[in-house]
Length: 150
Image (tube, rainbow, N blue to C red):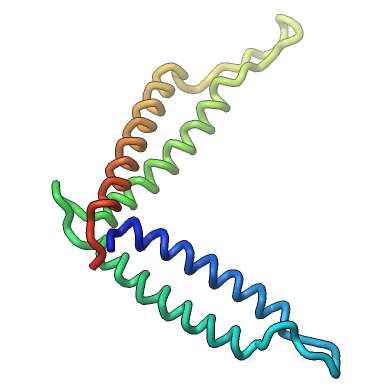
């Protein structure tokens, strides 16, 4: 099984667990003399099976991500880099929006509001980081479809 297939299966198992959680909550109590729409014991057994399968799959995914990859490093390191690049880019975009927003003045006597940074230079940096993020994400996606699950 390829890593990408395992990631898809993990997402499906997580959705299944959430659905079982909702069904369990909906059948936790009933009015005296009534029966629940579904047997909670059966739902709990199904939840145990799903969670066991999910735990095993997550372990295998994590082991796979921590193995060395062609070109050096690990998928775990690439994922950490991607997450930090994404967050950094998001923060810089927000800062750039604030720095480049125009402050309208009604009269000449009002205080001028100026940006604290050179907006064009910061925009180039954000563009560079965005490109790096896209390339890194493409590399990770490629690895997901070529790396075998451990």
